[in-house]
Amino acid sequence: MVSRRGFLTGIAVTSVALATGCAGGRSAGSAGAAGGTRALPIPPLAEATVDAAGVRDFRLEARAGSTEMVAGKATATWGFNGAVLGPTLRARRGEAVRVRVRNSLAEATTVHWHGMHVPAHSDGGPHQMIAPGGEWTAEWTVAQQAGTLWYHPHPHGVTEKHVYRGLSGLFLVDDDEADALGLPNRYGVDDIPLVVQDRRFTGDGALDESSPGDVGLLGDTVIVNGVAGAHFDAGAERVRFRILNGSSGRLYHLGFSDDREFHLVGTDGGLLPNSVSLRRILLSPGERAEIVVALRAGEPVTLRSVPVTERAGIDRAAEFGFDDSFDLLRIRPATDLSPAAPVPAALLPMAVLASRDAAVDHAFELKWFMINNQRMDMNRIDMTIPVDSTQVWTVRNDDNWPHNFHVHDVQFQVLAVDGRTPPPELSGWKDTLYTPPGVTYTLAMHFADYTDPTIPYMFHCHLLLHEDRGMMGQFLVLAPGQQPAPMTMPMDLPSSGHGQHS
Ligand code: C2O
Ligand code: CU
Ligand code: CU
Image 1 (cartoon, helix red, strand yellow):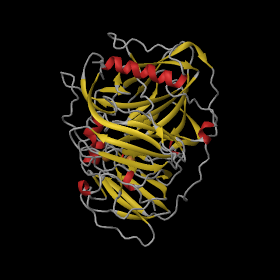
Image 2: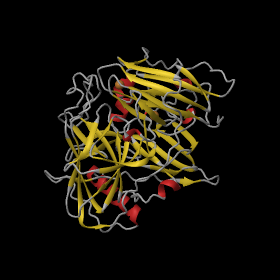
Image 3: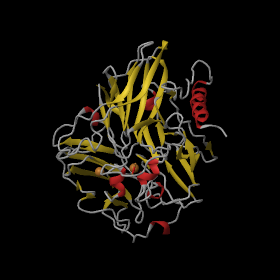
Image 4: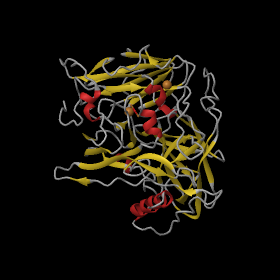
């Protein structure tokens, strides 16, 4: 049996080979040497075949395995096509994709394409359960700008557990506009995905799934791409990190050990209108940030998470992990770095969808594991949205806990924060937004293309325990004249959806 250590090292070497056509020149590092670090595993790019109709076909299989998350400890985990996490799916804007998902777990799960504009039957939410041993096919055409999206299970009430056990992967969208900007884009070489998650282990190395508290399963060990204590040997002057907060409930306040500036170039839905120079970025669960950092030859630096400073209105900040610090990744630049172009100031222009004083279509109040005083009910539709409409929503956290807000099917713009212009970190497309207590966010989004009178999309807090406890609602997108059809319970729905494009 191949050890997990060997497997991870294999991933790192393979992805470098894939990206450069040659496996030489970069060492995979010494895995798990006492007190040392291990080479950062790079999730492999998913294999795909393109069929006669031009559809890019992917296969995912959810299965159980064993992972050396902490060096020297075997931990039972779940993964897609491997023991933990999943391969990186990658497709271009305009491309038709199909993903066949097999569930080889002993319990039902789903796979949701977080951030993707997809038909409801392919969304992979709680209404598209895949029974143990079953299969489900999602199919859509990628119709959004280049960005860093992700996929993860969404079974009602147990999403936290399924994600915690290791089921998550990235879905990268590419397009010509992003390619033309000259940002670092060699996957695994100078364009590096970082899936950041926290875990807690029992004495025998198992994942500790006990006592989630109120924030969820808050871990004391941070793993990046599935391992704790990783290093990355950089060979280029500038490196782009695509960072996903894939944790259940923990926020990360990210920066570098020497407080150097970096450029934020993208958020959840793709590249920003303008790059933003920052020293810190806050990421709540489900959010992504694409940053580009300049490195100095031979001078290691550490990507770390420092205490969250924005805590107004949060009681029990320590209990929510706001005081914690972690080293995430040791970056070790070579003594001779390949040159890289500076980050352009202007990236991708974004047309504003609505004015900040436009009439509000829906207002959401987050409180006590509820949204607008209601807990999620699979058989209740909370609202219907006319297709081709631009909606203005407000969201406010009326609790003294951290929450955030995620919407399926769309990317949204933040029009205003308490009526004022949002900070530059919120100047681009978002699908998940941190909502500290007492602040009103005004969002604009456009619902296009897909309608379905039966299968809803979700909106919810992406702190996964909160979502599981019912901090979630459902909406249908309807064609003109279409009436909502009665809901049925999830397992009665067809497990595979085709057609139904409006
Ligand atoms: Cu990341 Cu409803 O999900
Ligand atoms: Cu989502
Ligand atoms: Cu919440």
